[in-house]
Length: 300
Image (cartoon, rainbow, N blue to C red):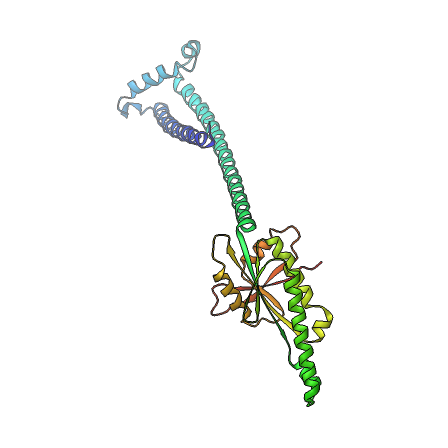
């Protein structure tokens, strides 16, 4: 029998026991009133008192032996005692059934909670599988140089300024070449932004680690290198153009030396066993549909 069926049966038994106890209580009150009437000898004023007494005597014969009935005419007293005993028994039964109901309710609540936990775990598992196998990524990268880093050194010497500009341009070309040659994925360009098409969260994790490390190389940092990185997502069945446009838009926000994204990106990265990034809030922007997050290195 299922818990729900047991619960229903227990409720029926409890209701029946409660009703039986109420009826017995009313019956006992009536008997006591008749008994008191007999003691104070005004039972003659009670209609059908003789018939009632005869009925109670006959009814009591089912609970006591014939010898007891013959020895005394206290049949109503015996009946009252028997009813009190029945009340105690019915109260005990009601309490037992009440405890059973509470037990079934706890069991049902625990069963529902276990089902909810199991369902939520399955939903979470299915969602993680979706993130892991159906999501693909667009990484948009813009490299730039902080102009004051070399203009302050050039003073007013045009030749020196020109040499610094050439060195800076060479450094940018060098870094871009390292990106295009080292990152193994499909690549496109939108103006001065490099677009990387990435197939899985594991690949995204590795590429972001590489880009972050590359842009923090000491000689590049001293030369004033700054980077703007954005990550967006699309499913395997969707056209990546919308994700590309979104990534370019995020890069154009100008979040210098940051990797910015929407919440779904860190959720995807969390499916990676050796995920190197945590997500922190980067604020809300008026023309963006969702809050923006920054991916930062996890603390060791």
